[in-house]
Structure formats: C-alpha cells, structure tokens
Length: 172
Ligand code: CMP
Image 1: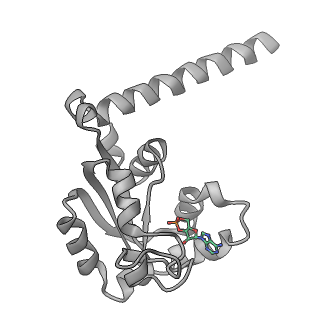
Image 2 (image 1 turned 90 degrees about the vertical axis):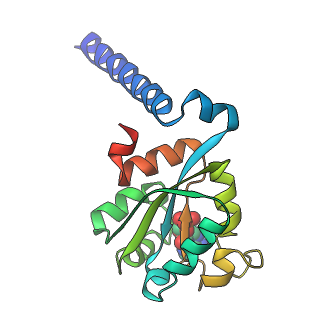
C-alpha cells in the first residue's frame, strides 16, 4: 500500500515537472530568451473598468511599447476569484478582495515586452495608490490599496500560471 502511494507521488511529481518544462519551452522561444522577451498577465480591475479608464490604461500600455498579445473582457465568478487569489486566502483582506474582484467586469491581457514583468510592475506603481510613484497607473487611477486599478504578475512562474488561468490556449 505504502509503495503504491510512493509510486503515485513520484509519477505525479514527474508529470508536474514535465508540464512545467513544456510550458516554459512553449512560451519562450530561443530568440525570446536571448532578448529576455517576457509575457505578463495584466488586469484592469473593476473600479477602473467602471470609471471608464480602460482606454487610458491601454493607451499607456501601447505608448510604453508593450505589445497586447491577448485581450478579453469578463466578469469573474466568486469561485474563479477565490482560485485566482488563492495565494492570499489566509490574509485578512481575502474576502473583501474576492467581493471586489467579482463586483464588475475586468479586462485581462497578455502583454509582451523585453523584461515585461518588471516593466509592467513599474508602470503600475506600488500596490497602495497613496505610495505609488507619480504618473504610475495606480497613482493616476487607483483609489485605495484594494481598489488599485490594475494587476500584474510578480514573477515568471506566476506569470505562466496567471496567463494559463485566463488564456490556457496561449500556453498549450
Ligand atoms: P494585486 O497586487 O494586484 O493583487 C492582490 C491584491 O490584494 C492587491 O493587488 C490589492 O488589491 C489587494 N491587497 C493587497 N494588500 C491589501 C491590504 N492590505 N488591504 C486590502 N487589499 C489588499
């Protein structure tokens, strides 16, 4: 019985590593790797969509030379929001975050650029709009630490997972 469980765990671990290598090789071609071309998930959050800031945000994205590879508008269900933000499930703000992210439509994008992850985080500014750098998107369009207008992936690993969440066919 114990041997069977052990074999099961080993098979699962090998499968997960294989999937990870497959995803990495699929997203990043060798040319992209040489230039460190990256992809990041970007979200225009419900507050910014509702106050009609999507166009202004997309304008900044294009002016800063990101390429919009994928884009769609949708409304998250509570289950989807809980799953997307599962990393925060033990935080005191988790319930409010899920309520907020399901309160209206969002616009999700895959952005491409050299060092896209860091560049998009720079353009967004700090999480709290009050501390966000002047002229950053959160400084311009955010209301408070929760209603902070935009989201971005925080690492290559997260970016793969987040892109897969909304655009599975882009990763396959
Ligand atoms: P983001 O970094 O895009 O994803 C996690 C979100 O949780 C974050 O944006 C904020 O919207 C929210 N968040 C982070 N910290 C707090 C906090 N202290 N209080 C309320 N919301 C928060």
